[in-house]
Picture 1 (cartoon, one colour):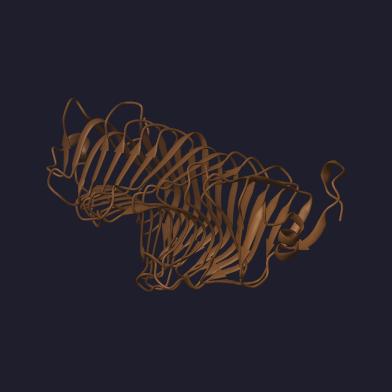
Picture 2 (cartoon, one colour):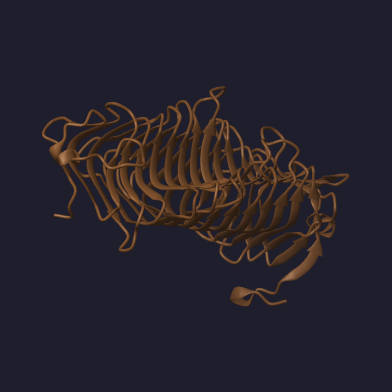
Length: 463
């Protein structure tokens, strides 16, 4: 088979390759193959047998040039490739997995700059059926303490993820940095059972992910415990962190009874720039969906810049669908950037653009803004049962909306306005119970649920 640059690809087994390069380059012990010196593999397609594993030890630097490592056999309960030194993929190289299952790991990175993608592709058909989500899930790429991975280019493609599976997991001090390239996951799905987590790109229990540039793309995220991107730490380790910089993009095309981006417990998401774009957030069968969710305790989302756009949020009877959900003591702080949520409708379920549910949302300055548009039938623009310190908010209804509600504040002092709030075009503009209109509206009524400080203004018209 021919390759780029005049390279002629030779297909060979891992066993045969070891025999070819000899013990001075790679040793073998049963099914474990270990590089004993630095090495460049060029113009090969190396095929792994059922139980073959590859180890790159500390001090060894291995480079793939126009070379493929092909692991079509099921990876069941083992670590296929372990990097304690370094592994570099050049343009035209590839690592291909079939199925990763039963608590197996495709690639384990334990060293600084252990895995570097300068180009090339990592492709995984299926990740599924981990044993438990904490210490024995099935994982495509696991980055452990003291380990780091850099994606400068190329692509990571995962076709299907199911039940206790992670695509990339930075764990207990592990670091993943995306400086370019693409991560794409076509289908993520799981059942509504505690512990059946499915996560695409995850900072977990003290891990860190930094997206400078590049794209993370989820086509369909389905099932109660499925999330494309999240940061989680339960307090046993230092908080996990996801940082998005100016040229990063997170895109989710469909969220079905799941979440697009989530922050849990003592996890932190910091958006300094870039964009989160989520569309088609839907929920049915008495289930729940959120485009962006910040959940519980010390979960924090800091937006210092960039954009969050969420469109087409809808729920069926008895279900809940929310564009952005800040829940149960979590905190969202908007220092800058824009949040735009549009086309929110419901059958007879609960659908809202923004929910601040026994949590706190703070807009700190004049540069950040929230714009909610096309709030339709049986839907809410902003629903507050916690605390919302607001400076720049606009909520508008759909053209035909008989029973939409713009802005609800259930609690006394639930909303503190120090800027400009506009609500218009909804059947009910301002409400303290989600059912009836405040008469007169806050522009003419000092309602205790919608308070003012520093000259804040409420309006019930577009201009």
